[in-house]
Length: 288
Length: 288
Image (cartoon, rainbow over all chains, first blue to last red; front, side, top):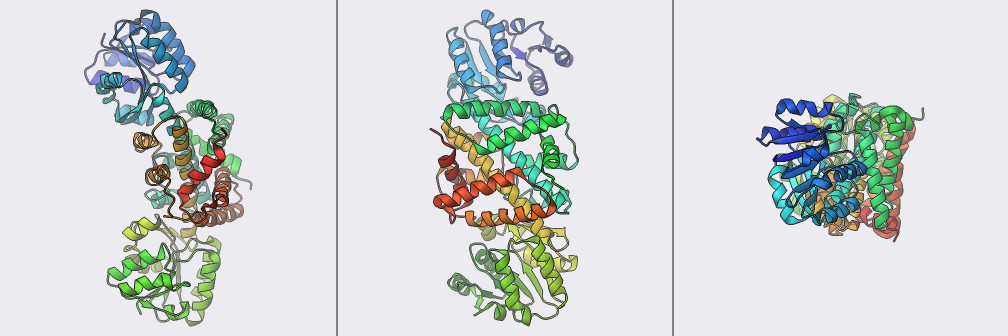
């Protein structure tokens, strides 16, 4: 089989689908098999476990939630990995884990890239993800044609782990920029303005951001359907905090956002989109 | 005289210059006259005080730092204001003050708009400012042709004060989005990445913002020359805090940014550009 795709959730499924539609043959596996079944209709072969999905595949993609999940997948596929295979982990996990895994697989002659993405479900569907890659340049060049089917801005950031470090930097910016949008819109509403009009007025200037322009309208509509789960940004910010501690930095905005997203989860929004932060802010910041 | 322009600082001077270059006749006044003199070379007439600048002008623009400064200008020009004149305050000041002033001038038959801007010195020079206007619709329509020479996105936000409330919402977003950029870049640098490359990788996705893309390169170059003074964003955040208290909201990110910009000022950067926040963050957040 040409490609194995392990992890077909909210991000993995539309990404795998783009490869299938570009003419690639895929074997797919997901821990909850129902989520992989729709891809079978698109032409994918459903594997019964991760190891049999990966077996003989030239390129093995992994897109699962957390470090422990990637670790479990690696544990299952490693016994059958053979020289010349390429594993591309597109999950967002600890940079340190990726460095260790790349070293470990290098001993088997297997290439390993960390290639986490940004851009959410919409980016996954439309193939406009930002992809940040760490690992050997030769392996990067090998993966590139497939990555180009998934994303628009694909950058080789450096050695193994560098993709994840970039992604975590990205998540710091995502979290605080969302807070910026949510606080600005709450202030505007409480100040008697039409928040939609505020969005029009400020959405192209110095306050503008992807978060404001894309999630601002959802905040105003109180549409908390997930593009990107609160649960997952909480996981990402935990990874950032661990890495920041390793680098000897204490980021005040990161700490604030950890508290804010924990509060958002505590208020029942863990499986809502990150924009539900605005609902938590409304409940927590309004003192009258 | 057609137009009076009071306040020709870092923002006011290039804005006034755009009106002159479009063929309008301007009388200018600045508390520190040296700053107005360059405009005389462009064809403006220099007035000896605010009252004589405003005298008989059809439209009087004000662009000064703070509420007390606008109050002082209004105090000086009010005795000679006559029915039919239009005063456009483009400073960023308290919404409540604008409402009071508009009422007061309405009794003289003088129109008053609050029309604060966003976009910094570059926006002022290039005429690409975002302009947020509060006040009567008729007065807005009267001012519009002149405002169109100064900005690209010009929005009538509602009654008097609504322009300032919008601007303050904008400043909340500006401040927190800058923190987002600064923390992301610090994390990336401490994580061993080339921050310029990180900017390329994440500058078009979910983390993207005007602050990241415009001030990120300056942060990386440690170029703290002012586009927008730390001193002025501190003033703006004070106005936000006052208004937020009036609306009964307590914004955690706003509070953080008040502390962060106070720290930036305390470290000697009050007359640097807002991006000097990154320098304060580096000094305050690095624990090893």
